[in-house]
Length: 87
Image (cartoon, rainbow, N blue to C red; front, side, top):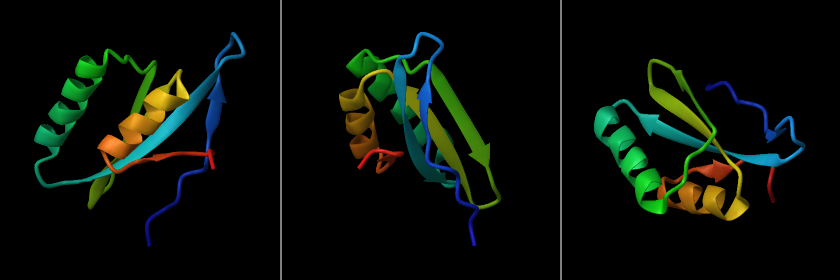
């Protein structure tokens, strides 16, 4: 069973909310998938202030934080991810 990460909406020091998106990538074609993500971010002119990853033997879990909810939602939709803590 995979470990579940906690649901998080972060707050910057300025009090602005950051929206966390989690995306799971399998090990196949990982470099190509990460390249697709960076290209998408460039095309959208979005620079997430936080980009984290966790590697397991089966997959890689990415967590990116966005300043704008609509950017987070679009990213999650584009890469089959989920905006955490938002219903």
